[in-house]
Length: 410
Image (cartoon, rainbow, N blue to C red; front, side):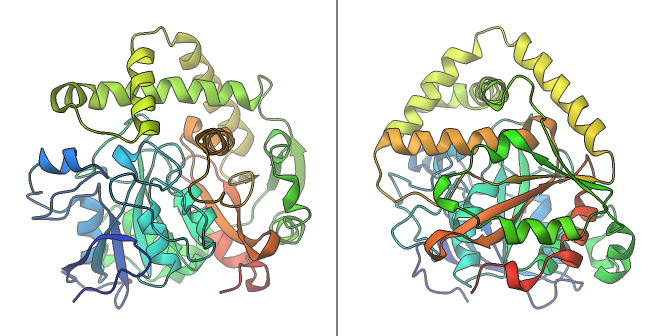
């Protein structure tokens, strides 16, 4: 049986898939972004023309199959921005889910419905996808925990792609404990039903952190209205590490990193969806249409400089973090902006978010966003980024050191 759609999180609140096995997710419920295959369901990818031109899935996405086998029950398919090409959460065709932690403010996208489903207690956890920030941004705006995993760590079978070079399946929850449990299922190499209890796996995963690195360029982007909201949470993170240090990570500046990400992503997006767009001539919202038009232009250009910069970023960050260092940044510069804002204001917010989200995106690194109390009680996101493949270790460490007193109040 489904549930109500009071917050507008769901495309289909009535879709239910019972667990197929038993495991560490017994008794939990989850929702799925409408780009992830459910047997017999047609994913809309946030666009009616996509919905009309595609057939029902003949099987579950691998991530869904693993969660069902571990004892979780799927309840509902959630809203997304059009073809995942946005960070706002406002969809001209299907509306905007209500942000439960910031009424009148955008929920963030493109995994907007998944974040709202979790934040409104309609689901224990939810799957989203994250290419340029689509799990991290809505998790931050809605005051919940979210993980963008290491690129390539989660099986993408059954997921509509956007830019495969950066695409990931991520997830959101209201506690670090559940975020880790889901990770133990999705990141496991064997049968998810045989996943050992969390404590057994977390013991090694949560080994001590050598050093926290605070990226100066990232912290320079924070909204001044946030004041000292970050200071208490940062102290908790620093107490969980052997040492802390402020560092400069981008000699070129984060604007150069963002531009490299933008062109590499756009080129891949057009390669992925250009043929369908030319064939189906879909109706997009003005902002999405403009992005696809720009992607078509970018796709034919020389991206060798962006490619070289990405390779350099991967080397630098992997050398800096190793397997026991953590980079600490704000998830996005500030709180969720008001819904229905002017296009230029929303684009400015998108640009700030991309400047921060491109760090882990370009390097393919795992990033967890943690909810903290911001100005006027609105959510802020504080992020920790680990070395490549350190997903479980990062999640376990957070579970050990993160204190309820710094979490956003329910």
